[in-house]
Length: 437
Ligand code: ASP
Image (cartoon, rainbow, N blue to C red; front, side, top):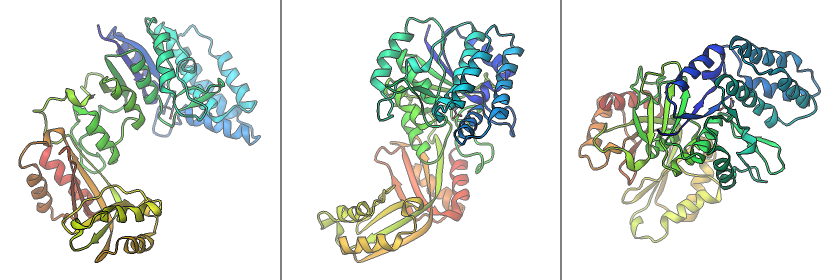
């Protein structure tokens, strides 16, 4: 039987009812041996996440303000869960220690991490399995960066002999033993780290959506779910704005070629999305896996006759950007043109400075600036080597009257990125989705 690491997000553990769902999911497959919980999330739209409440307590304590009202509601939530599930553990002494330490000036990371810690204690009791504190097996170095080697070594050794364990997500420890958290949503990373440490066959990420969608549901109504996506495609889609998993959670499992299965705790029977290593994806699947995009870019088009014969021309243009500390997103080129695509956040109103610097460094014939641009990426491993995909893409856009200002196809032929005007963004995403879904 395969080994599964199952991470459950905050909404999957928001109250006793959700705990019961989690228990029945775990009970369905004896391979689900390592459980990584988040802290309880929102029960309703207006509710607060425990993590946010803990941050608030710490902030108030630091400012010398009372925080007992918020802390009391945290206690109430955990005590309610323990009571409704008739747990054996007495969680109050643990909560009292947290309260005292926050009162005594504990760090924000310590305070926030206790959401997962206390929840982990409850779940371990509920499932009847061992609790392994993440501080014992997940490490950061002096600079605060995640220490992958030390973690892998110690976590593997500690976990491989444990039949079933609960390891709270979101945090680990620094060399001096202090608690440090990942960035928000970081339990996804903890789950991936545990999966790598125990050489899991699959890393399940249980959340409140049934996997990744082919397009943003705020733009396309009712988009289909992506059943299978490769790490590489996901990276492209995530870079272009599609989000479900914490981006950094991909790396530990990708390195170890462990698939991630994103599933919905509230609809466990729906297939969800499986993220597979690049080499494991079958070829004959869907042509396009997903469409994603972002608004807010500027294209700087540099023209010079015979540019291709001038050694170092691109370096001069890019050198100008580098000198100004501006990072670029894409660089599509023509015979005598070279375009630099920059996000407006990077550019930060410095168009004139950029143009002047490019003129000074590279002596072009002309430099044009096109503002208010959006980028849309059509991503699919099935597109490579198939004739006619771009023809279909561009016909779909022309039917919607979308004017394409830039085209960039990755050398892997796995994505086609187009530059359009911000105003055409929704029409373009819908047109592409309809053509390929
Ligand atoms: N509880 C933490 C947060 O709200 C970590 C997580 O849920 O992944 O960000």
